[in-house]
Image (cartoon, rainbow, N blue to C red; front, side):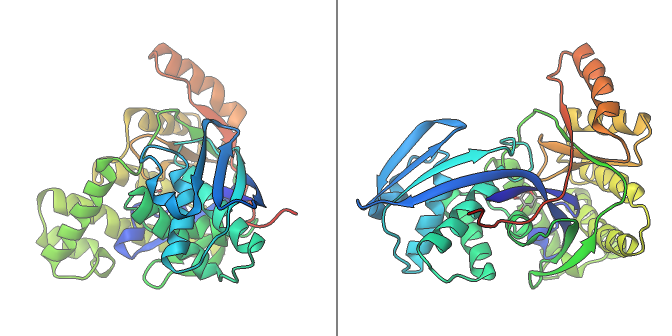
Length: 348
Ligand code: GLA
């Protein structure tokens, strides 16, 4: 079993060596795995019609568009380390909504690597599992993501957030907000493989180069204001202010103080400076704040996906979303409670 995740705060900071504070949620991918006598891998999912059967030595030939690229990417990453995997059959079943910015892909990768590690007694450490999932997603699937999702789904503990420092991938357990947390799936799907994510990443690298630093982690908002202009200034302003918000949030949570204003500032920064929000996500956040939420922001890579709302119940929020989105002829978003859960583990 591997969960999805919600990122409380710290968006697009991971590949800039900054900070983020995610937690695992009680929506998860279940995987049943059994060894097979043949040297082939059979993969099926209760959510996907397409089944894949492929010889162990041929995993790289899976179609680029197939969802099976995620689990097969893990096998590919293991083979690259000269870890041989015999044949197996895998059946996936997931309650993480796909393309909703809740890390459905990282949960498939993590479920696969944990199950293979257990079944074939590979003796991999948690750090190995994180690296293998990351390699599979970046190098095999082709999504140039950072380490946020892999660490969140593999290292979270129920009831806590994980403060991640991406410079050395170290983690610190942090209390979660005491207010109710609600996820709103905008039902406007997001994809990390699409070019926009990669473009933001490039823009951040260009901004760091223009400032003469290795990564934007080393820069401050004041320096960015003074030295950069145009797109580079906007992207770097988001990353440098977001890093400060993450550390401030972790500090406040340690003292049981509210963090709603930090979530709101994060959303504005992602919307205006980083330009990764969209009309649906903005509308969800505005609707929630008008109803009295203490904070709301888009989560994940953006360009669609989900929002996180603090301080409202889902049944207070859903009717207003239904009315607003129906009037605009937009698909009605789905609000549900965000409950924290344990990271990837074996169920039996
Ligand atoms: C996606 C990526 C992560 C991270 C977030 C934005 O979820 O997979 O690595 O960059 O976007 O914070």
